[in-house]
Length: 290
Image (tube, rainbow, N blue to C red):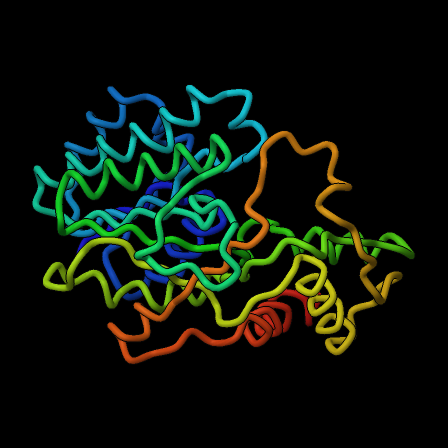
């Protein structure tokens, strides 16, 4: 099986490329090798490539910058996926396209299912939703996978930043009134091959580690795991900040955007592991020897 991964320089794309390298015939393209904003280059390169599965892990993900550069956001997050879906259709290949919990408005107070109506409140969310629709309109074989708060070893994420701050400062804080679920790239890589078979229905699928937390709870657990691993920290506890304190943010963020993985569990018979377990595993792998 030949797999082509776009966004191979990013946190998720790099993890998928690394973890599939020994199991499949994998090629990865980073931004320097393929700029999705360049439609002519995208068509030329991908039409010349040979693949059975195409994974799009590339996106314009800077939520605030999307507000000031909406044309670029829609070009990369909405129009490029339409072109990818069309090329995959020509090749009779399956497109697996990653999306986000930010397609929801955050008004719900229980986990969002695939049947819940998306209602984004930022340009980033609007552009990602438009990309989802373009992918699914092209072929019913294509799969949109929504994930949230993605972390992993290939590029620093929120918890890596918090650990670094805790190593350098006596006091740190994090937002305590925004709720979602961390998702480990290692776990995404583990679940995805079940959907490489085109006989498995396409559509939309949510995947996140189990449970929910605030950014503050997430950061505190990471510090607890670091202390258990013997990593020296100056700050041991994470103080409380509120969303209203984040005056430098431009875009609105959903206050609650937990994704339900119930459909994934029903399809596969497997439940994602708890986010605390996944974070502890990541810190053991990435920080224990440092």
